[in-house]
Image (cartoon, rainbow over all chains, first blue to last red; front, side, top):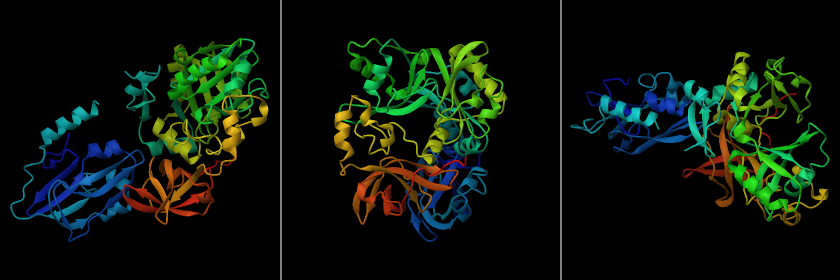
Length: 130
Length: 358
């Protein structure tokens, strides 16, 4: 079950908008697939512009490394330094305290192009049966 | 369709994440690689290693056949002893790294899963008129490894014989639940422990018995981080048909004075060849992981390539093994590793990265 108030990218990021502020993280499914997260790097800092689909960082586990991709474009307003300093802590609460980056969206930007919770659930259901 | 060990259904039913390894569907982890790794370093972990090839040898010339393909000297082995060595091609490159066992009644060999048919073919190719028969027992038997400081004590009373009396790299043919089995004081984790071979019929019972006694199931993910900390080479990474034992730091497992064996002439030449890259250990300054294939550089010039790398849970550091130009293998030498386009600082360190306190 994934939270119903979020939208999702195929690359396992989630996003939620409040006003013009967008918070981005990665899903519980992604965190579980990675399991042993040992390193998180965010290549952007507050004030930097990020395009939709741009790789803004990477997350590395013992097994594998994956890029972090912006589900939507905007200007970075905050980076969660807590998970950068303690990467393993992202696993505990990926939809809350484990958020990764916050953006200020340009007027008119929506999340309509992202997967709905139902669509994302369907995607991970097919992936976990690989 | 990937092959399955007799324990496959157990793994699947207990939440293991499965992965294809050398054509076998194997558990990579049950809970977390780091948790499983720590279990082996501090208590006892249990691995299904039934995918490894198990060959038995009989016939009056069994020793002669083994000597033809083995870089180490099997002739000086005593009964119940196990010995590590390589099988080399005629150019001195490594076809496999193996264990040879000597019994009063014959010989046995444990080979890597991915090289099993290759080694069986190589033995047939090397046999000539020798009186030696090789039986592949892999699919009729099950092999598990119980590893860690508590491994031996938790096996107390399980077998007719007492494995705690076994010396390191010795093995005991004994009985488990009335059936034949072999218990060997060997492993691939850098910890004390046993590797146990039983018939497939006893496999699940043996596995569950060891779990009941306190061992925890561990997957190939932890097996990889454990062997990497202990700097044990892995075929396909540190070892290949192009790399010779001297490059791999395995000169101790090559006995050029034992008589003729395949690859010997090439090895005599390669032993003195200082242009060949050597295996070395690298410790990274940061936490990013240098994975296989990452280029190692100094001052912009390439000096080598990473063969495997990981986050070392016991050391809490990013480590790697690499093949480096001989001039750069001295501990303390600094270098850069290109990890996905960004250079990370690293230094050559002595191997192994981790050594248990005996």
